[in-house]
Image 1 (cartoon, one colour):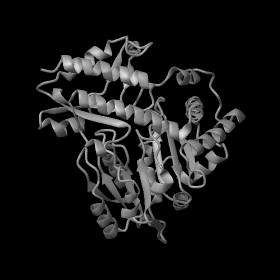
Image 2 (cartoon, helix red, strand yellow):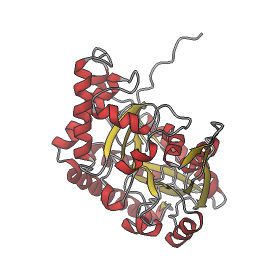
Image 3 (cartoon, helix red, strand yellow):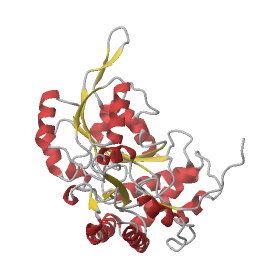
Image 4 (cartoon, helix red, strand yellow):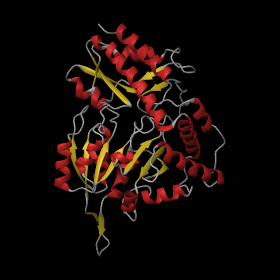
Length: 396
């Protein structure tokens, strides 16, 4: 074995994983708390109260967390599909899912659900585009699904599948459960979950929550949890049991107590700063600056990849011309610029997701992804200003 490499100490400016603020990293360095310690029981209860307030789901849905990855929830969505067991004990699904296949992660969800044995009917949506509601309504009328699955903020391309708001729920009707992958959205911008009719939403700690990977933050309505009760599926834990134990302050496993304590502090601080309204105010501020940034670089071949009206509020994605802009040099210069974020040797920018870059390469384009969440607006603006200067420098 070789000696472990030193930490490069760069600020991650990406939709995820994203850099974490020092105050929360300090919580991670505190003495480890046992998962059965009375203090941790109170931590879970307090976190539940905080998530209910911040997500504004009081009386509508129950929050819960679990150690793991948000992608673990892809197969766990199978718990929401009707199933039956015959006289021999053989188990099978009798329901199905309509899934909006809009990016790499929705495709992965489809793959995992099919592995679990669920019938998935996909509606393919091109990168950077949003689902056609008439097509979605037709698919629901045809297949009569138990679940409609949507990735809200497409991390790879920056499209926003919830841009049509309540019309999405109207298109699918009241019967199907609406499951929304909120990764890269939750904690970055507030959405009216009850108005949108979301039955199950989840996200990972490593994106807009701006914490290390390892925690799933989720919520589910009573009807979703009732469907999950007694479900026989391949998954870590039953969703209904997780939600019930979390409400009682009982961990569902040997959870990462340090990371959960950091999440508790993060939620508390967000509420103290003004909660959901303040979250959206900051997000609007960041989006205004990002839009202006795109405008200033238009003559250099920089263009928003999704139409800005259909773009995610928390993930920006723009294209540049491969023949004109040397984005590799832009990234290299930023990675060694110690002036951008105090305490870091530089900033690592995200020069696009492989699949999306392959999609636009035929047009002579590359992409860059911008996280429009969490960080101090001054840091956000400073990084974009430096990126603008370098793009101008390395564009012919």
